Length: 380
Image (cartoon, rainbow, N blue to C red):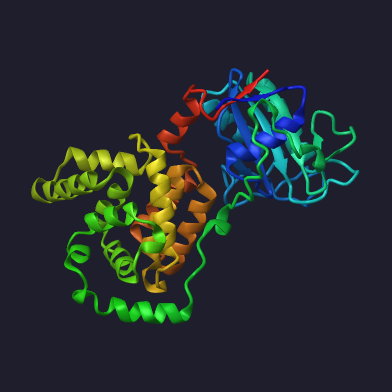
């Protein structure tokens, strides 16, 4: 349903932004690219490091900003305008969530937001609104001396199709990682792993079908044996590719990946292998986002039931799935977890290189450029 936001009422943006982002973040900015009068899903971006409430005239880099080497307010602003322009947008709205009270002094990150608005003007990008939502009140960067608005003003905004239901907190970075299993459970799972030759053959001999079965059932219905098979088979790079392509496109894609690997081994070339490589790097392909979300749900559960010895391969795949859905800070945390267990893990290093380059999957970019009104915001 198209959501209507009146530009004269900033409270509507403060209500809309977390809905489009899937939750309310902290220490973050939500940027909403606009195409004409429509806004699409929000982009979460780390705030430049600095003391909440300070002028932040000199900013330090953070690991999962768009570019981890940013050191000034201008660099931070330029990275945002560049990203928005790359998406094909002609304007943006931004809401800053500093995770602290605004109080009565200067707005936090004022210098960074001033730099952003100046850079938008230089690049022909319209700024629909620029707001800050603290833990006590909200403010407007374009009118920083104005009185703060109480958060209670946001309650009950339901007219014009805007849902007032609180989407909850947006988990980012390490917060999005599953909790590690208990030591007792790990010991029991280790005993199970040592006897995998006795388990059902369909799980051991056909990992493609094993993943397909797992995707079709509720995660809490997966047995420890099924999870053990998944975490064991994903340790093998060739099989991992089959399993990942199954999660992305279904069992048929998994089997085609297997056939392509055999073709590559036989003659040293395969068009399918080249296409898969382009998809893994996010340079081509159009996987269903709903299917990736289901795969992410499954693999998050699998990761939460993985013994430390097998974490590197499992968290590398989990990191890729997070990146594929557009949650790069969580992907970065997954890769760090993987490389902590195995600094030389090949796939983890590949995903790390993609993240370090700041690359966004082409299908995520295409989703922003899609002018379908579904789940969009219409400004009037």
